[in-house]
Length: 164
Ligand SMILES: NC(=O)c1ccc[n+]([C@@H]2O[C@H](COP(=O)([O-])OP(=O)(O)OC[C@H]3O[C@@H](n4cnc5c(N)ncnc54)[C@H](OP(=O)(O)O)[C@@H]3O)[C@@H](O)[C@H]2O)c1
Image (cartoon, rainbow, N blue to C red; front, side):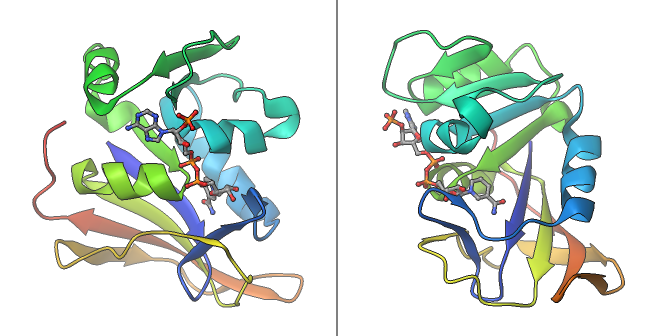
């Protein structure tokens, strides 16, 4: 599986339950990468989407201890139930969308991380976990600009991902 996230210069990813930045080019990158794929997210990230609704054109798998069915979502109440759900999909088609809690749990299982690095401090209250020494930078784009924000697309590869 793969992680996809936008990070600020302090590894911040969110504030008050929402995102730190609005970057149209990154949204486009995100849509293109994940269209038609399986996306795995925490309950709080689902609730941060417009209307708390799942993303269109993707299989939305939501980690939560709450067993109440949610329209358009496949619910997983543990990593072992997630493992069962993901059995029917190719792991290269599975994207971990966050948030902080879910990145922390699933990053060791990701063979790649697509990280959009924003050169700013967004004043975050939730953070991406440290990548650790297994992840190395494989690719990075040139620096891009959106309004006053400068950012870069990067790809990190994990040399020894765990098997879920
Ligand atoms: N910058 C980015 O790329 C990015 C991407 C995504 C999210 N975000 C931001 O990240 C923040 C949210 O992150 P967060 O850490 O607070 O929340 P989160 O990871 O989205 O969701 C946490 C919730 O997921 C459920 N969960 C997680 N692991 C589980 C497990 N093993 N078994 C069962 N349930 C599990 C629990 O739900 P229950 O409480 O229902 O049991 C837990 O409270 C927001 O600010 C959001 O905007 C940023």
